[in-house]
Image 1: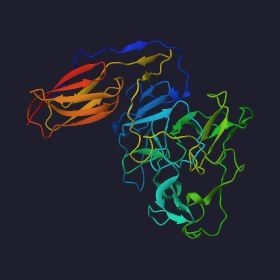
Image 2 (image 1 turned 30 degrees about the horizontal axis):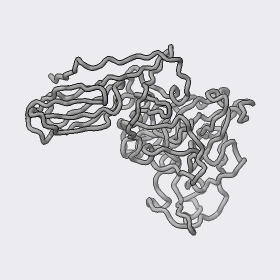
Image 3 (image 1 turned 90 degrees about the vertical axis):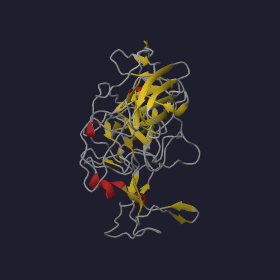
Image 4 (image 1 turned 180 degrees about the horizontal axis):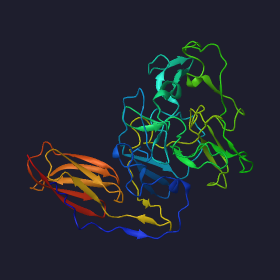
Length: 413
């Protein structure tokens, strides 16, 4: 039987009673407080929401609580992503060079699933190369709905080659997209810090008028040719390429970024908001979530195929949803080591309520430092490679600036 040695000297968490938290960027997340699991028995939804005066950090695995799959013609399977994503609490409009949405995550849905842009990652000739038209580097990007839609499940999502379950389009199982009589909820945040709403909002930006479905201002081109691109024919009909859709101001309710500044239930004074776009039959409508570019300024560390693993370098408060609006400030270092004894690899499981930025230092029986792991974060699992170490007794010191916890690890041959 495996034994897990738990140090009894851990500091107890300090609970701080605060006024009820109402900030949407903190409370809009679907935090898993019961250990509920989703696909593959993996922990679902968001594991931790932490916040400071200026930032919100969301830890999640990109596994929703609802049933997902199957994915026809897609051999990939979802796996926990151990994301730690960062959202500014004071998003601002980008007045400089437009920031294009990259491949990979461009935001998170409220349940911790990844938001992807409308592209499938390939240009029309199945390459990943762009072309130059005049002084502008461009390309005919394949529409993910057209080329990958066959592999979407009933929730309109699918896993990437890295196991990241995501939606390019309206996340049909996350909210009621048939409810056209109520303002849609916040269903996510883009990496520029601005909220993403469902498909329905007030008719007028000042919060008046009937509830209506938000309409994209991207219009399908009527062109008969594509410059330096595929021919317009039965193989490549209009709509197959993202660039077949042309932004036409005033054609819909939303701007070039697929959002607008408006009053919402959460923002009575107004806020810039993105909206997912669907047609009258609830089918996804281009550009689906965000337009080709962000409205705001994007912080480093979140975007791209390897993004979403931000280091938290400031003191934060852990948000715990409760009826009384109590936020918990956790100061203790909480973790488990499995297996123990270990033959090759041990796994450090950081508790959801552990302190941030823990440093792990492994010492041998002579007191020599043999391993260091830095920036361990709550709710994340880390691998401790002990394959090249001799059999014996080791001590793992888990440290922050003010706290230190020791645990014995036995290494077998």
